[in-house]
Length: 298
Image (tube, rainbow, N blue to C red):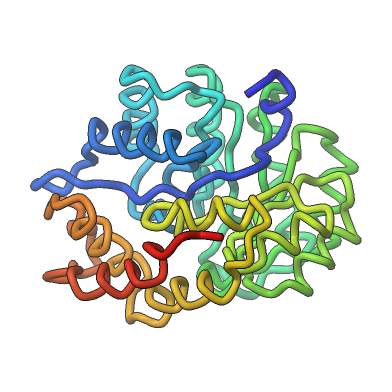
C-alpha cells in the first residue's frame, strides 16, 4: 500500500456488507473485524455504504460515525472508500468534507437518483456542484454507474468531461452495469480514469483491457474465489455459478447477508434495514456456495 495507492482505487476491493445491531444501528465493531478478516485474505481495501452495504438506507451522520469507529478500531484510512451519493447534493458535500477531515480520500458518488428524466448536462452539473462545493484537492472521487439499480446512468460523455474539468480529483469510475461493452465504452471515452468493475466474472478481462480492478460484493462471502480471478486461475465458470446463487435470488443483499450469517455462525449478519426483509436462514445457500469454493482453486 504505497503512496501511489491513494491516487486511485486499484486492485481488489470489497463492497462491504453492513452488520446491524438488534436496534437496527450499525455494528461498527463487527464491521471493522469483517474488514480486517478480508484484508487477511488478500483484499486491498473496503468500500463502505455502497449498494452491497445498503448505503442509501443510511444518513450522513450514521456514515460519518461508522468511519470514525472503524478508524478507531484500526482500519487504515487509505484502505477505506465510502459511498457518498445522495439525492441532495448538500448531503454529498457534507459527508465528503467530514470524511476528508478524518483522513479518507476515496468517495463513490451515485448521480442524484430520484428523477429518472434528467439530461446528461444535468447529471454533469450535479457532480460538478459536489466537487465545487467540496473544493478540496485531497478528494479522489469515483463516478458510480449502476443504472439497473439507481435508475440513472452516467453517460460516457459526462465521465470524460468531468475528468477534463477536475483532473485527478475525478480519479475513477465504478462500472456495475454488468455489461462488458459498457466498461469498454467508459475506457474509450475516458482512458485516464481508473475503472473498476462490479461484475466479478469480468475481473480478468477488464484488467487485461486496462481496468483498475474490482470493487465487488461477492468478496464478502467468497474472497478466495475473487482472488483466484486476479491470480489468473481459470475460475470464470465457477465464479459465474457463485454469482448466480446470490444474483438470481429475490434480494442480492438479504441473500449475501444470510450466507455471511451461516459462514460465521453469527445470526446477527441476517439483519437488514427496511424495506428489505431478512431471510430466516442461509445454511442451504452456504452449502451451495461451498461446493463451488471449497475445491482447490487451481
